[in-house]
Image (cartoon, rainbow, N blue to C red):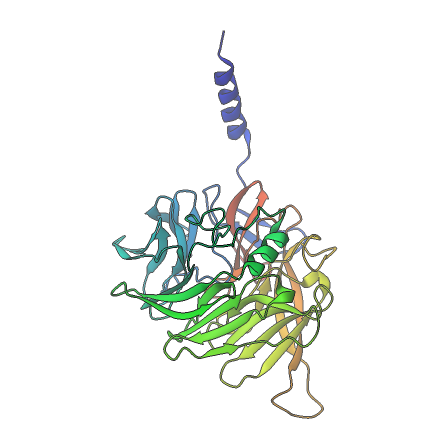
Length: 410
């Protein structure tokens, strides 16, 4: 008699071989835009929307796989693995062809051409790194001071110092509990050259989502994490002078703002703004040098979990959302292209006024078969010809790209 375990193993293997491989290229029948599957590895994924996922030359897309980090040549569409093993990718360098990542409790970098690898430093206790400076001289991250319990800490006890956090029922409860814990935190930098650790800010706010400017090596954006309607989320800190600036001040109850990202030239910060939550939708921008503000309006179905912008600032994109998201969109499961239009000012000129505009939406990809528990996290390729996103529309997760121009030749 054949063992049951062998029968089940054989059946599982047969089922896997019978699953059709997702297509490498097709035209979305609902939008007319061509889509490519860029990766071959099931479980591969492009980076979070505001991480830098392209090497400094613009030649390669950086992506993760279940077994490490790979790069894909955008011209030839050939990929190769550059880091092996279980790691967490931080960023691709903006000055070199290196990728930066965490392996266990240390930060490393690897040259994607030569594969030469350097250990930068061991992290502070309970520390994590989020971002790399524009000139690749600094890493920045945070850690919880003391032994207060935290959901994501490998070292924190389940109960200590009066900061025990109960297992949450859902993400919303987790956010509430973590904010209320008021755990003492430190924000720090690590010198990539020497490994020296410098604390630049301390707070009992929940410090998160650190992101260096793409052009100014000293300018670091960060957020006060928590339920968006209860926090003043978006801030910057100059790592040299330690000057802190609040980017957006709430003007009404239940106004929310977040999922912030830099313009490619570092001159502006863009973010999702809702006035109030779930009712009226904007993509808001703040100019660092003049403090001028621009708000582009969106329709409910066009709201996206994340937005992004081309390097020249002329186009935006969004990854849509399902009915369970904050916008409760009835027809929002699309990858979008947005063309910004400012409203002509026929009235009073005042630089302190918000400059209003609208985003004109074009649908690029029908995402009705995508499970939005996986966020697509859109980004433009450096030549702005493609929007890259990750999707599970065929079951396993892969990286895809949709062509911005409709009906372009293959």
